[in-house]
Image 1 (spheres, helix red, strand yellow):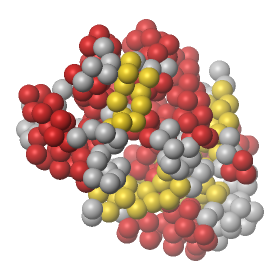
Image 2 (tube, rainbow, N blue to C red; image 1 turned 180 degrees about the vertical axis):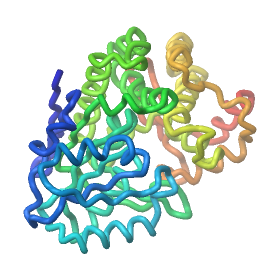
Image 3 (cartoon, protein in one colour; image 1 turned 90 degrees about the vertical axis):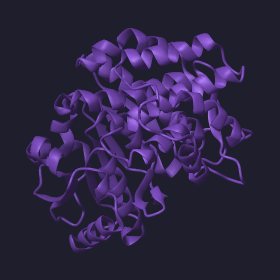
Image 4 (tube, rainbow, N blue to C red; image 1 turned 90 degrees about the horizontal axis):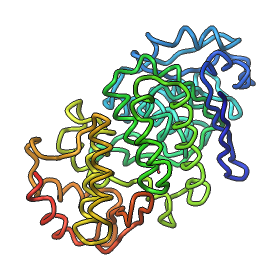
Length: 362
Ligand code: GLY
């Protein structure tokens, strides 16, 4: 059960290796630091407690761990500064890889630090959450948060390798599994109706820990993301923007819940995708049946699908959409759908129409 997905980016091409137990091969998969110094590994307290010992025994070299508190509050300027200083003082040379061992927060922070330390050093992603395994560890978007919003300071900096071990998911709580699964469903909804049908048939097994289902879903998601990133690495042609299906609504929901445990990123994206399909259906762009089918599968997977009951106001949500980093030239581009598996970027949507759509749903 081993899958290798190549991200074709010329001189910056790299492999994503997906295999149960691959963590034990980390020593062979990741080259030794040229500096001969201990291997720098960036992680958080939760992952360190659960898995760092296994990584340490897999690496045939001494470890130099940098351990941050778990959670979004770690993606700050202060963490960036301390991590960059650690990279420099650890004597990491440009060809040496720093290992990001954690979820999206650790991957984003480490990737950004690697992008700027010595004007760019290598980093390897070993994602430990389903969300990071199917989305954030792949594609080179790195960032920290700023006072003005989430992920507003960052860089495109591709990892030199991504090692995905689905066995790491065994310690993930069911809520985090479901939230990560929303991003798996996203690939079916945005561009692959057959994969969405596979999700409908296999979600229960995947969420219950079926390894073959997990490997298939992760590899398929990574393959789709790799193809999109290879075509539009810097999100300029509109192709990569399709990965933001559900995210414009979703970011507004997350912002209004303070990016807190009240609503996890994947949960906000699930609700956002339901809104994107319902909005598309209301405008006659996609069928009501497809919108209902998308909603039914996400709900059956235990994900929230309605923004009602959170105390959201239309004004606040639309304000966030206006502020959204994707807003350009006075309009906010929305990823809408013509059908399941056929999303597209629509730059013609008036926020007044979004307001009228959302008002009765809150
Ligand atoms: N998570 C969206 C992207 O990587 O483009």
